[in-house]
Length: 309
Length: 273
Image 1 (spheres, rainbow over the protein chains, first blue to last red):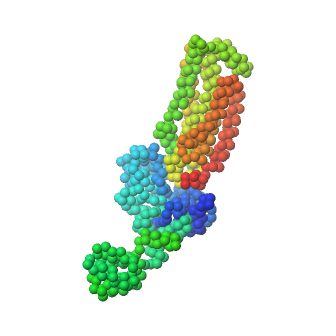
Image 2: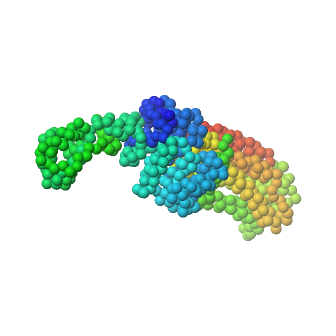
Image 3: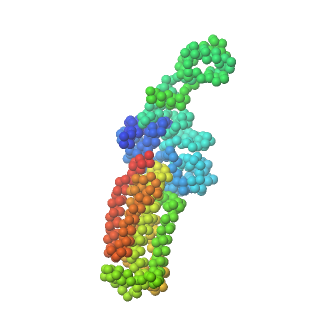
């Protein structure tokens, strides 16, 4: 069942087209990543899907509701982490959460318990009664995340959720996203962090100047950019020059190497046995041959390079 | 109407206001000046006027120009009592209106433009409140304290005026009916005026200071009233105060209509960038 749908959505700001004919769907329990440079249209998508902006063309539906017409009802079931934490620095963490619990309509008798539980989960309980102005960037980000989860939303929109977090806190956020997805909630993740997207997202959309240039799982995207593999070959150190020579003669020019490992890029899957045979016949001792799918990062830059071209 | 959400916005804005020195200081200093210092000085005016080189002679011309109705209020009073009554009851009346105006403007500037400046507005826009509820919350968070301060201030002013002028007047002479109309009818309207102008200005500016300074032009009509009263061009009678209230409430209605047209999520978030 699709919980988020965008159908040929266009959004303009005066002369600038922020989104152009964007269509996508996100299913229950799915973690959907939106990748793109600054200004690609990621934040505009979140705003449209929450009824904060109105599209100039096309149609959005979230949790079966039209954000444009049923915005207030929809926002009761969605949680949004904005790009900046947007927490009130003159208030304490507890006050911030208590006020938003009222705004989100959390049952009164549950407010205090839920606020405390989130403060504990996000490691803020000890400083819950300190003004937020004294918090680190990471603490503010954690508080904003806690706020987005206060009303137990069915759909969660996260705009750069780990920006400013240390690796331990970022790891905790990743675990949380996996847990939320496991509970059947849909997560719409806007990120610059490609490793994060690769780890968490079931599918991703790559936005470029308001247009989707690729959509699918990270593996599908890899195939879209040619399906070429990277081959890591570990050899005896003194045999690296010989191996380079053999690979060069076979027409494989994109080779990086260090003391004992050669990394051959752009290798078609069916050429792997041929390369292994070539090296063995040339007297090179192979300790390890590891074909690897291109990372999302490699795919992302390949897609952008293709667009630029 | 989601009253709990509206109350939460009011609570949030007030908590934020009382924790900012830049916002809180004018809210303390100006009322102290207008409601304690000035009436106390007004009560001392007769003594100052009898100092060498001073005189109450100008008073007689002023009194002669007063409408008959107002002249009745000072009949039977000596010159000192007349001076105290005119200053505390009539000259201070338009100055008192600066109080609700200033309180509403300062809080509205912090609530509307300040929230934008602190980058906390976007989170609020993602809550399940309607545009109307958001606006009502913001509106009440400036209007209610302005009413509170002007009402509380009126009681303080009453106390200070009667106590400090007791040696001259020898009786409780304040407030009169005109002041009751001023406090209960005109002051709420003037608070809404300051709020309405500041809300409109806030939509166009980036921060609290800019909104407060630009919104401050609304004080000019009140300054004109003060000058008009002191120079004898006009007198705050009960009739004039009723009419003034009607005029200000009418302007408020127009400002409210304009503000509601502007206060839309899409427009607000557009301006956030």
